[in-house]
Length: 194
Image (cartoon, rainbow, N blue to C red):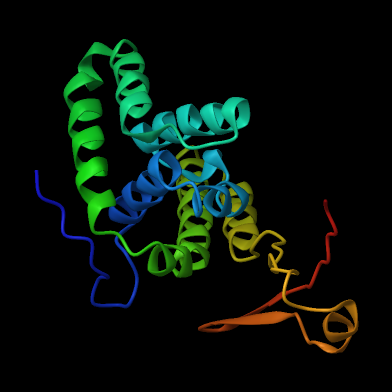
């Protein structure tokens, strides 16, 4: 299976390709894996991608490093033991993930994360609203749609190493997202950790 990782015509990854690229980073990239873990909760992934993300996250938590190709193969075999119907899908995703990793531009993938998170948030809220509407719960469906238009609070991670505290105090660290018809403000948050 040959996967060509390119942005779609509207300027962002199709969701499945981005999830696969994020998994490639989680499983194989010691430098950028922690950035993906920090920015993309495992609950954000869909279906089979989530099962892979959970395995990678558990591995990172225990060993403080990515699984790498050999351990990734072991984890993939563990995933194959789950639902027998998904065994071919697990194998295909694992093989494709390894291929993707060879030509991936991690910064491009990381730059696409915010749009992915917004897309996943909207998708989940719209599916919830559709289910409520189908069940005849119009008011609850409307409330779900309205809550779907409000993005969850997010934070911006900042690399503190090259900056002095004085520079940070003077910097405007907030970021605005412009979505047609909606202005979403990201509020700055400074976390100092060892």
